[in-house]
Amino acid sequence: MKNSVIIKSFPNGIVLHLDPELPFELLLEDVAEKFRESNSFFKDARMALSIKGRVLSDLEEQKILDAISQNSDLKIICLVAEDETTNQHFIRALQQADSGIEGTETQMGQFYRGTLKNGQVLETESSIVILGDVYPGSAIISAKDIIVLGGLFGEAYAGGNGSKGHFVAALEMSPEKLKIGDFKYLTKEKGTRWSIKPKVLPKIAYVREERVVIDSITKELLSELPL
Image (cartoon, rainbow, N blue to C red; front, side):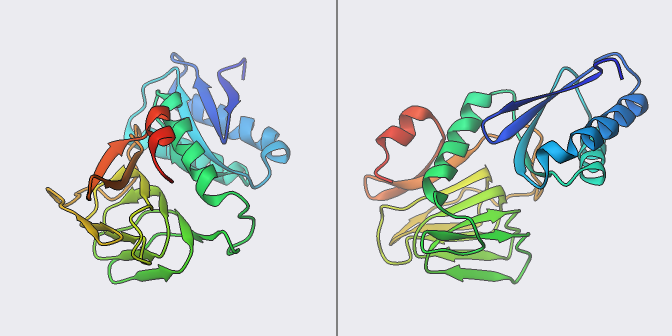
């Protein structure tokens, strides 16, 4: 293997450093071997993944993800961009929202593992973390906050209790409709890609000056929000 694949960790995720010169098929074999050897360490953890050292096509990225899933119990929930600081702000927002969640559902909130497809509607009285995408034609409705570890391309309604002090966060934000409390977000166009993009820009929707705005997640913004 000769260090063609190096795994380093950051909070809630791992960075995969790949040899830039090794033929891809050989590199893929090394990735598979590396994660087989590391399986007992990662177990069934859910993590974000960042890939560095080599420019990959979408197909090559998918093969890397397949190699990881076929050779370990590790769950890769998203691919993150080079800007790890921004992505860590997103992860910090998740930790604030789902602190204390260990099962599928608790008093604090709940997880939904899977993708919401056309025609599906998920409604909850608590905050919710979606481990998947929300496709066009589907909807997620929460009395509190919504976090999508994937792409939000359908409809999202947060603060169903009428409060404007809630938010919707997603790795890729392109909703058909979005509402927080009694305030609607006026979308400019519908999303056309449903899957998570290799280089994501986490965003958060919240109410400011009596209207819903969507901003990139930064440390400064999180400190200012009344979440």
